[in-house]
Amino acid sequence: MKKSILGVVITLFVALFLVACGGNDDEANESGSSDSSKDNKLVVTSFGGDYEAAQMELIVEPFEEEFDAEVEVITLYSADALARLKAQKDAPEIDVVQFSGGQEVQAAKEGLIEELNTDIVTNLADLYESAKLGHEYGPATAFDAVGILYNKDLVDEVPTSWEDLWDEQYKDKLALIDISNTFGLQFLAINALLNGGDEANIDPGFEKVESLLPHSSAVVATTPDLGNLFAQEEIVIAPYDSGYAFNFSKQGQPIGFVIPEEGAMATFINMQVVNGTQNSDLANEFVNYSLRPEVQKAFAEQTGFSPTNKNVEISDELAEVIPYGEDVINSLMHLDWDTVNANKDEWTERWSKLIGQ
Image 1 (cartoon, helix red, strand yellow):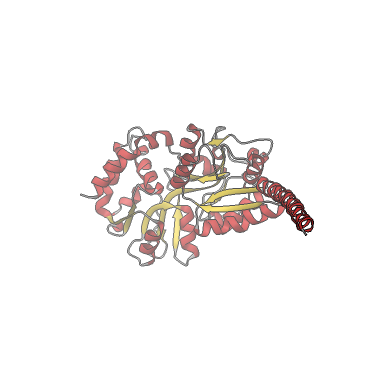
Image 2 (cartoon, one colour; image 1 turned 60 degrees about the horizontal axis):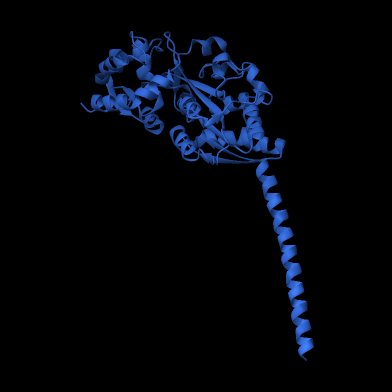
C-alpha cells in the first residue's frame, strides 16, 4: 500500500514537472511572439477631430496593410506631446510624434527626436525646401497659413492687405485670436515684422494689435469659438488659419480665405521620429509613407491642409482656398521659434494685461 501511494505521488510529481516545463516553453513562445509583434508596432500622435480621422483613413490603415504593422494612434496636441516626450525621455512610449507649434525646435535641442534615416525617407527629396525644416529634425508633412478669413456673403470687397482689418466697415465685426492659440501668436509676430520689429523686438506688434482692439467684438482662443461667431454672423472677418477656412466651408459656411499682399505666416505640421524608439526603421517608413504624393493629395482634399510634396497636383477649386505651389510656399513668413519660445511667457503676461484693460 505504501509503495502504491509513493508511486502515485512520484507519477503526479513527474506529470506536474512536465506540465510546468511545457508551460514555460509556451510562455517563452508567447513572449517571443509578443516581441515580434512589438517590432512591427508603432505608437504615433495625432491632433484629434477631422484631422485624426483623415490620418486614420488615409495614412494609418493603408500603412498597416502594406507593412503588416500595427499602429496605435494617441491624441496629443503639440504642447502636451512635448511634455510627454520629456517625461518619457529615458523610456519613450511614442515612436512618431507630430508638432504644429514649433515644439520640434525645443525637442531637437533636448535630444528628444532623432535625425531621419534618409535611406528610408526617400520622399524627402521631393519636398519644397522650406518644408524640410533642417536636417536636425523631421519634415513638414502638411502646411497651412495664417491669413484672413472672411464671410463671402457679408463682405463686399475681398480683403487684399493686412491693413484692411483696420477698415471702419469691420468695426465690431472682427475677432482677434488669443496668443495662447498659435495662430494668434503668429498674428502678433506678423504685425511686428510688418512694422519694423521682429520676434526679438515684439513691441511694434503689440502696439499694432492694441490699435485693433477697439475694432474687435471678441478675443477668442479656440477654433470652435471662432466658428460659432462666424456661423452666428457676429463677425465677418478674422486673422486665422487656411485649414480651418476649408473646414468651415465644408460645414456650409460661406467662408473665404486670402493671403494678404504682404504675405502670410506659415504653419508647418511636422512628423518626428522619437529618440530612443525601438522601431526606428518602421517609424521612418511611416514618415516616408506620409510624404507620398498620392497620400498627400488625398489628405489635402479631405482636410484642406496643403501638401509639402511638390509633385502633388490639386484642383483649381481647392487651390482657391488653401495655399498651394512653390511660389506661394516661398512667399510665406516663418516664425523664429527659438526667440518665440524664449519670450513666450513674458508675451503671454503682457497680452493678458492688454486684453484685460
